[in-house]
Length: 411
Image 1 (cartoon, one colour):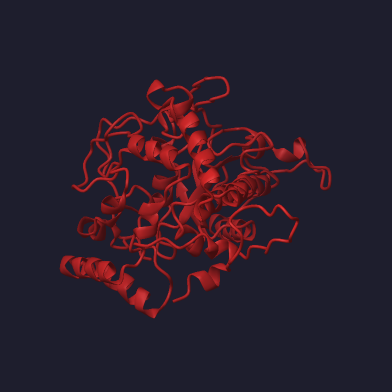
Image 2 (tube, rainbow, N blue to C red):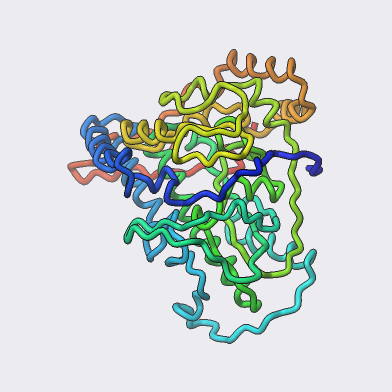
């Protein structure tokens, strides 16, 4: 996609965001969200007791298994410089198979970018892009819930290049939203990303350069993915990609390797389409997403004002999660960009890039008429036909089958 567009405007008084105000971390210190942990636990217990298929114990067991890697081994989704996201070389701590002291290798920027893309895809990335590090997107401070510390973010000298990587969320599993099965898919992708950023960082370190692996910590993923030319911002707040729409999670490795990356914003027609389409705001049960125009102002502590965009009320969003006992994901499910592959979808995407407002409004109406994304898939999308409760007589239970990404996004 040719880079011809400017995806955001930043006001002069913009200040870097303190990770402490991240809505995921606030329940650990903010009295306004102190209810979250206990209410979520109560909702999960109620869901399991009800036996409702989309929220039964099998779904929560799947979610627990899926999040194991990223929340174990000292690692965390939002935790910097710890476990697999350690800023120090892991081979000095754990590796024994290939012991050597790496010397800095001279690299050619275009060649090493191609090599890094190949390496990142080998380790599991579905999208790869490069951008210089815009310090505005670096958190002003980390937040460490275990200690309550809020230290400033201080990157190693020279780390001004970013490898941004995206991992696709399974089409069919995300269409079950909001269920524990959908939560499991999100969690599993975070576990995949923990392994991926650690492996890519270790590759870079073994060539003699510094690498900072990061999932949701250290810097903001969405603007970095936009700067890398992988996505555009949307009304719902998530990044929209050409191939996967909103079904993507991003992570990154920050490095001093001379990649000579440049900012390259793409134009997929997303923002103009979002102006015509309000399906995410209409479908949001928490009424957390905006109906109006883009603005420079946010709703509360978890918004960082100063960028022209749509701001969500993420306190409302978090409160709804606690009430239902899972992540939500309805906004992603109903988004017209969350559609399968196929000639007819490709034609619509091509027309959306033309940014014709009457056509955009027509596509939204057709999407409504077809009911696409309005109804969630049943949880048997993952499990197949099976019991909804654990077997008490030892009878073998059928094994789940995860659909391939190719089959789940065709047509």
